[in-house]
Amino acid sequence: MMGSSAKPVMTSEEFRLLKDYVASKFGLKLESSRREALSLKLLPHLRQLRLSTFSEYYAYLKFGPQAAEELNTFISLLTNNETYFFREESQLNAFSQAMLPALKEKKLRDGDKTLRILSAGCSTGEEVYTLAMLVLESGCFAWSWDVRITGIDVDHKAIAQAKKGIYAGRAFQSTPARYLKRYFNECSEGYQVNEAVRSITRFMVGNLLDVDLLPEGGLDIIFCRNVLIYFGDETIKSIVENLAHSLRDEGLLFLGHSESLSRITTCYLPLRLPEAIIYQLKGKNPT
Ligand SMILES: C[S@@+](CC[C@H](N)C(=O)[O-])C[C@H]1O[C@@H](n2cnc3c(N)ncnc32)[C@H](O)[C@@H]1O
Image 1 (cartoon, rainbow, N blue to C red):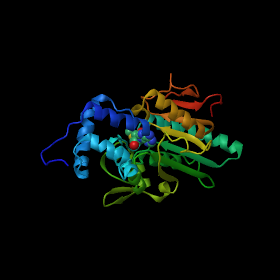
Image 2: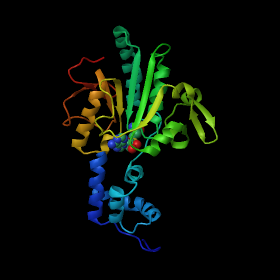
Image 3: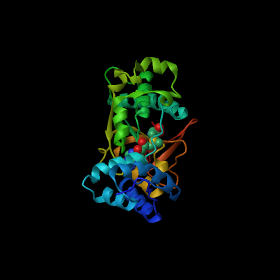
Image 4: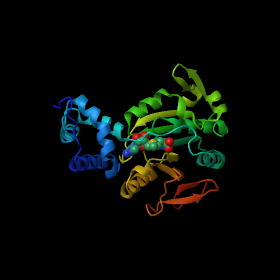
């Protein structure tokens, strides 16, 4: 047990154990420069658990009676959940102005009236709801269309918040006023996403490294933005190739503006639009 004034220091060996464990479970890459930050984040939690050292915490995390639950708490402490509505406008313009109309044309030709979009690493849900608002606003997929926009994240707490759909402050830093007016209801804690948007969205907890996470071939578009920056190249390759299996023919992958697949995998073709680079499954024709 830890005395009231004792403050355990995370040794480099303890950091290595935690770092390797997190890499094996979630693919996340913890740079050694994050040792101190990790230690500070974990300290209050160690106190709560009445553990004296990070080695004890490692044993508790890996072999403790509630190891699975503890892993969820640990990953919540580690993940960077930074997100907000209408993040990276240029890509969203490419999505709503170029890709959605082209996709609708193609789907009408094929007699397919479904639209399936995934936000992989959706954090607290702002990206999912942004995509839903853009789909509704486009008017391309109204009436008899079956639209579903799904958000997946490994962080249980983030997904719980996404399901509530209530936001305030910084979440709205880039939100045009007309969207706030049209798609949200004011409530005591801020603004809640309205039913029109919620009805075409859903959320689930999941690890992008899990090969059985997604069914094969059902998705039209995947957004996986500002997620891959936390992984090493090997893990990025596994994740984007895993995502490729869940895309339909000619399916599209949007990455964050600082993320790229060059030198990672050859299974996507970069489509260079004026405002953004989008990746399409290789060997297929652009929509
Ligand atoms: C910085 S947020 C990006 C949110 C949103 N895509 C955006 O661009 O605004 C990164 C998210 O990726 C999630 N994440 C990290 N590793 C993951 C994994 N292995 N599986 C699923 N989600 C993961 C984190 O929990 C975090 O919420």
